[in-house]
Length: 421
Length: 159
Ligand SMILES: Cc1cc2nc3c(=O)[nH]c(=O)nc-3n(C[C@H](O)[C@H](O)[C@H](O)COP(=O)(O)O)c2cc1C
Ligand code: SF4
Ligand code: FES
Image 1: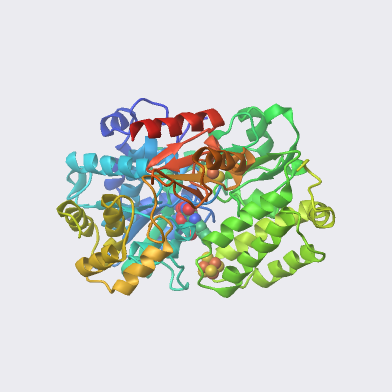
Image 2 (image 1 turned 30 degrees about the vertical axis):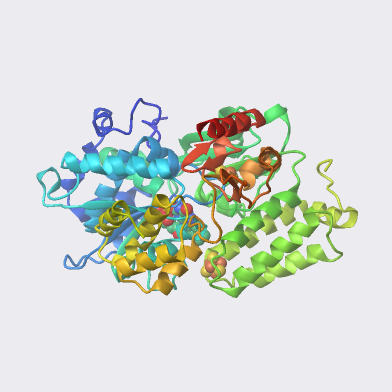
């Protein structure tokens, strides 16, 4: 399979502009600048490219919502917040091949009529931010950014905006609040960012991996792209595998590759050849699957049909003997810590869930605690302002669905049935 | 008092935006970096003045994001160990206790010589090389007890 996103990753000094160009880079944007912007949007629509940030929204459709009025300032924001636990794919692109992202952003900005773009990168990614800044500086020096790019009428400025530690800023409207210099709390939708986004102007927000797929689509065409993986969810995907496999890491594979193939063929199977107990397929917000589900193809629709999500395709693999109460506790502790505090069901609910899970995990569970978890889930789900609260519930419900008896055992016996702890 | 260098940085950051308020996060971080990795109330007020933003809003920003250090001072080397799922599956908890023992402090504390502060953090986007931690700007991955010994010894030797 031909790689799209990680094709340059192992090449020496791939982050330098001259090397990116030598590897065939910045051809797609030159081609794009000779096309009509609407034609580019149509190509991306035809490619069926779906957003890689989590929700899988069709990218071309999102772009088409941007008003065409040339007198209105428009923005592109690249979501490089990469906060979903288990996810480490966008970082690889920014650290090693930042020009791929810049080229994707240039084409996108041209297509939607944006003259300014921001990369919102999480604050901890010091190295990646520096690599991006350097790449942007180089691009300006070569006239690839700034006024009249490649002698065309198109002008573009790109900037890096650095986060400062807040998972919720990955949510697109919280990201905009943060870019405007406030606390990163989600906004009410509608209005959607396509009409009123950054500084209340039309704004497209796309993930790094989504934007990184754009140059190949322009260069090779939507039909080529659509032929990779399932037609309704095509392209390649960077699967970030972590946990108890022999070879964790990033694997760029066609969408729809089954989990079993990923784990056994690409990651070398399980550490110590143990059995698989559970797999989280798309970051900790995605409900876990078990051994019997391993033949599920990794694409948006197949994962949805299994009651979970492809999300950020962060695959976390857990071996036999892993304590699921502990997994649930760690996951919930995260959500509670990251709750932005705007709405009560999430703020109070996740912290209550964490308290209950903490005492279960520490051998202090009380009779009725499992039922209490379930009723708390019911009180949070569907009542929160943004999807973070629902994510917390879905993750916990996933663990309870497959491993409820472990939670019951923890309460009854004050210890774990899965491990010797 | 902000230094010339910090003021210049803030000036530069402002050029990235149409709105001065958008520069608050970058300005706070620039000040923190130039002040030994800590932020004071006075720093926040200075940022508010320069950017013509209400000080209350600047405080709110500093309070919302975890990377601004103003609640209590951090030491010269801020060790932040990831304790989210992928790192925990590969022994983060054990490594945290190990570091606590080597430094003689518990999570949340700073060594008496201010050389180290130890914290736990949520996922740092390095899960394929778990367990991991960040010290200052740098990531340390695939950690083991031996690696931690070397890293801490190197820092001690440098200071
Ligand atoms: C709590 C929460 C956290 C999110 N974190 C991220 C993130 O770190 N990176 C990302 O690209 N999208 C994240 N998203 C999804 C974004 O809101 C948005 O859908 C995405 O950036 C759109 O880009 P795409 O269509 O290219 O995927 C998050 C969503 C929620 C609700
Ligand atoms: S669901 Fe949680 S993160 Fe989302 S707005 Fe409510 S409190 Fe904030
Ligand atoms: S879980 Fe530790 S870096 Fe992601």
